[in-house]
Length: 362
Image 1: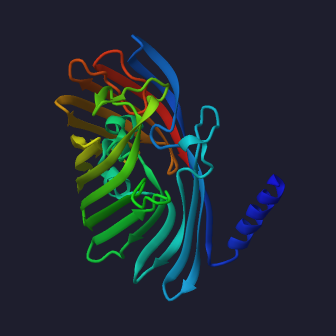
Image 2: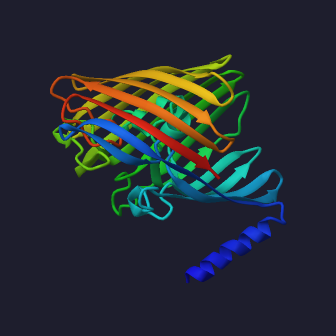
């Protein structure tokens, strides 16, 4: 069966090489070594996978339908470089899996497992992207900037008009007799004009399950991770998550200034708490190959606060290969465990992780 599958893929690729339609294999391989403080009361060295960008490979393609219309699809697999396992809970195409129609006049409509607008419209303004370091994304990735997906989603994005683009998304919950259960909805807007770029997004998810720890309890749900990736020992479900945010950046010569503000409202059993995060930073290109980045973020939730400082350097070895060095420091309120996103929780209210890595795109 596997031999037939491989043959079919090779035939498809051979055919596409001689046609106007497009079929591409692409991917990113990213590995390194990290040093983290205060894990179980001690410091730790460990191998990393996907710190600058998550490891992936995928297939994407399009077919010309005429009149400026195209059929499009994308199937994208995530994996961990350390052991070769599938990411996203073992899903074969857990990063993205969708098909749709793209039109020059009417926009793009897609169906499948897709990113919401918190990811697509705001991540470009975050230090997690610009440093780059996955550890720099905010608490538990509750604001969904670290590439979060929604299943069973119908997503529409308008054509660009005078620099503006709008979008909407709805995801079916799929539970018989309860239309809203596990459903989701979202909206997005973006604007680009010269050196200025801005984005806004809104997402609401019913019956949301938190996966990563933030070092404290929220609405009676203990969000304290214990695994090697900061995952919760027992995932916590909230009645509803509502996220919104706005971000902007401006390129001034070699310096890119960026700012971001997100709010996440969590509801459970009639009560609610709101996580608010503000972030600002700059990325400076010393040369074509070398860039430096630094940022500061402040988060508050239920009377508790977190301060996060990020710094990094990125050096291009070629157009597709780079090496990077970055550091992330998180300091939380007294009595709160510091938990950087994707790192085992600290045994105190502070934590630092330093990473040296290499990334290659194909």
